[in-house]
Length: 254
Image (tube, rainbow, N blue to C red; front, side, top):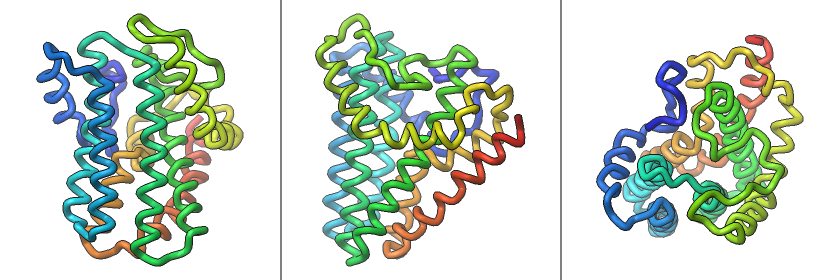
């Protein structure tokens, strides 16, 4: 099941794991496994990738990062298949992602003896990239009645859905706002009129999907495996320039 109606779907380069994720979700449909269990699975994969980086097992790192991306898609697929959407799962997913992203970049900084400032700049850039992609994607989903657990503006605590506790939603929403609030505000200030967009063409969304977390992790894994670990942090700093390019292009299209 997709987050968008079929006629509005685009080639999402960050979502390469979706076909396998769907298979995993379907295999778990009639089991006691919940989307939260799958989310915990991708957290374990992320931590395993960090362990492999520390021990210079870079191809294994790539495998764990790809598996992490697959499971990152599988938890949402399982929620849709079981018809158990939840804000608990949505925020746990996002909070886990940003913490793992920071730990992965700090680990790369540690094994390359690079600059901590540059590592933090790369983390900041990666998060802004992902926020821009998610911003446009959620606008598109809202416009075409797609998946509704993510909202364009995450500034109001949501009411718990059936099967989840309001207390859990409140805690995870507060963590989400603390970790993502600054990035959301920056992207909104840079392109506040995007919510009024009449056009977000498929080719444009495909280009912006290179900012998606799955694609970012794939690049990190491949650069590690191919011996370019020293270039990972500089690459993501420079790649962040495309944020302004995509925003300018979005304005031109509309």
